[in-house]
Length: 229
Ligand code: ADP
Ligand code: ADP
Image 1 (cartoon, rainbow, N blue to C red):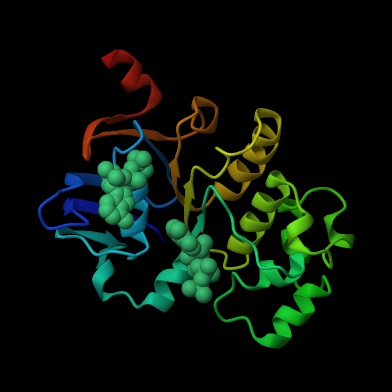
Image 2 (cartoon, rainbow, N blue to C red):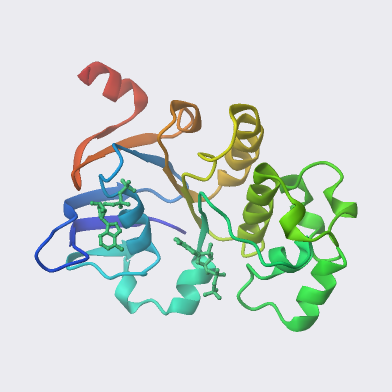
């Protein structure tokens, strides 16, 4: 589950300015694909189309053969987890912030997550000692800790598809390396799109897609791209 295809996808926020042009991508279920390219190339826009914050102008995006336009918002949100660069947390406990990521969580689930009960399986994603700190308020967290809460919030849904949109870009390199290891562990068994600008976050990707001015200018494995150069 989680085979993604972009077929001749075109998109513009305004009708007179195309941002993405003729995008063709075939991402096998379970693969990790890195999308790289200069600022303004359209990487985040591509991620937003996956989530249907916007719909394609022409062409189509399918997941397991189904056109995204035929998928309900609810199933889209349970199928796709996204970890953004700047996580905004509720001014509440870590537990509340994590349970919120589960679309079908009841008030009771959230309450029990806030007590630490419901997140046992996600402790791996959290910094050491976090299981006893679950009642702490989010705003006291460091940038790295916030990102770990964002990852755990995404994991609650156990999504087959993961989008990491510059998820570690705002962190210092030591914290980034730390969180990178967790991300690589949770990517296993999921289709993952990594939007990145640092090489260290994409060395493990199965395929690299290079986007420039809204077009795919190169794509292939690390070895294939090196031969091109
Ligand atoms: P990247 O993630 O590669 O830096 P983006 O997808 O953020 O690129 O942006 C691609 C282009 O789309 C840029 O020219 C940007 O100014 C434009 N853009 C991004 N978001 C919007 C928006 N909400 N409305 C209009 N234009 C936008
Ligand atoms: P709600 O579910 O109430 O609409 P959330 O903040 O939980 O609001 O967002 C739902 C999903 O959308 C989450 O998986 C979240 O990570 C994702 N999301 C929120 N903001 C963005 C963004 N700017 N770009 C991409 N995904 C986002």
